[in-house]
Length: 492
Image 1 (cartoon, rainbow, N blue to C red):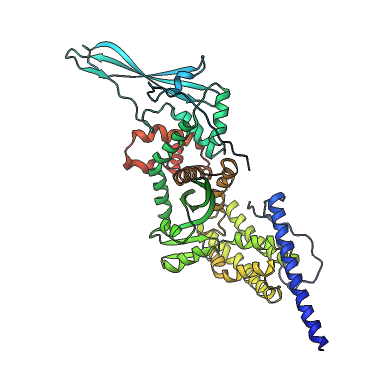
Image 2 (cartoon, rainbow, N blue to C red; image 1 turned 90 degrees about the vertical axis):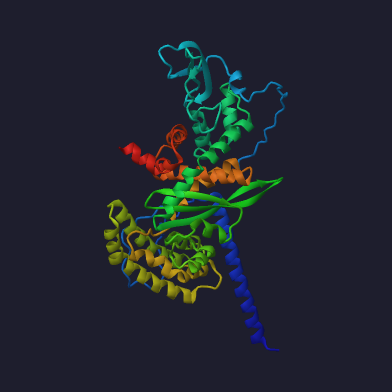
């Protein structure tokens, strides 16, 4: 019997099992970190006293850690007696006494000989942060000597004959998509103030406004794609379909130069969705390592693909507990790259000077980092977390470092990830979209509000302004109603 062969076979099995145990321990650590740990990726390396193959290299600079970063459902049912005389405007008949009324008069443009014969009053329910109010629009009626009746025209509305004032509509929508308050919670809050808005009524308002803002959202997309540099990412959302939910996808493009983002919902995640969003786009596309973006890059020769350093860094952050010495060494080098970016940002360097700074300081760091990566790849245990992290960055190396030869491309995709973050918070509160159409409208609202956030615009003020002013305007003037246009208007 060949004992040496048996021992070698057992050693191989033990090594395989050790690798499997390490992988399972790493997966458990990641799950526990996701559930209970901090979400920040800020890197603070612990002192390492073991041997270091790269001790001859330059000592790390002063550390400057970069920033990265289910509620129960309630089914609301109610029964009501059918109103045979229902005219579609019952909400204002059941309000508590003492609600303030704000009146506005609209002239009838009558002649001096016209005789006053009465007035028409149109009412809508408004909302201030502290209380409801009723907005009354009074249109006086006159009869001309010829018998012709003269009366002023009602202002155009985003929703025709809507009982809700623009202030209330803007409050409901920003509460839902910015403050993550589902409609049923808002209905409970309003009910405590004596205002009962039926779920179907509130939802119809939200969906109607979602359809109404479509031209503005499409204009945002048009302006983003015209910039020649976009960042792209995707996230999931549960969407109700019949009696169960299915996983849909929000695809997002962001323009770092404009500070605006565009969301688009699709039921699937295949390459046709982002390819359709980009259309005939020509320029720089920055994304994570998802293979769909690689396919788009291969199909469209007008696109130059850049990868995201933050995604590569994240792999090593996750691998720290698997191989701390290797992960710490690599993360220290990456931290130097982010120190350079922080310097450029803090000193407001233009593209020309940022490019110069990167070539002078980032390129040498990247060259050293590549030596480290190639050396570690020779000894990393196959299929281990550190090995997978090394494979990820080495395969995409040229697309990861290409930013350093430019002044306008960001080091990572964090700006578009920041735009998506409110969607993740929203998912925890409203859990799912009621239909594919509702998910499409949700994408439109996130397009507006993520852009407002990036541009430091009050989302309520912006949406109310749109609901008040866009109905008065021509569709040809849609360029004047994007968040960026609103910002520029208010700077004048």
